[in-house]
Image 1 (cartoon, rainbow, N blue to C red):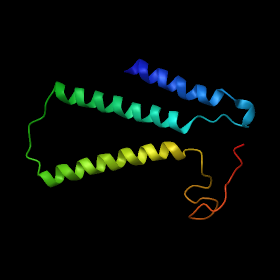
Image 2: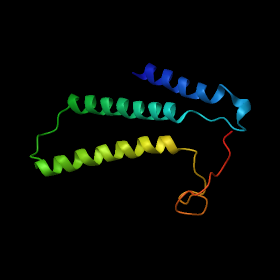
Image 3: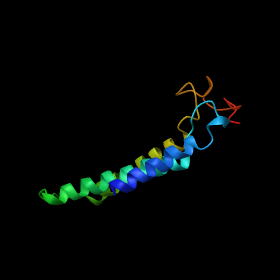
Image 4: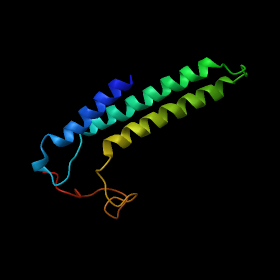
Length: 111
């Protein structure tokens, strides 16, 4: 899994090096960035789950509503992280976009 993460990382970086003459700075593909980031979270989750199974903790009763709430929060966190990877580097003046709450015109010409 770790070697796969390294390959995905190189695939991501390679996207920023393929046509540097088109841009003043290197830009990686947001799809490749999201793939790299989410695969890191999957690897971390797998390692954490494996570590927790090595020394099990005592079972505590968990109400179904709390379990559903935790599952929903984890899914929302995953969605937020993935969407953050897609907009990384797109907006300036964080948290405002061009000094406004909404983007009305493109900030930079990407061509």
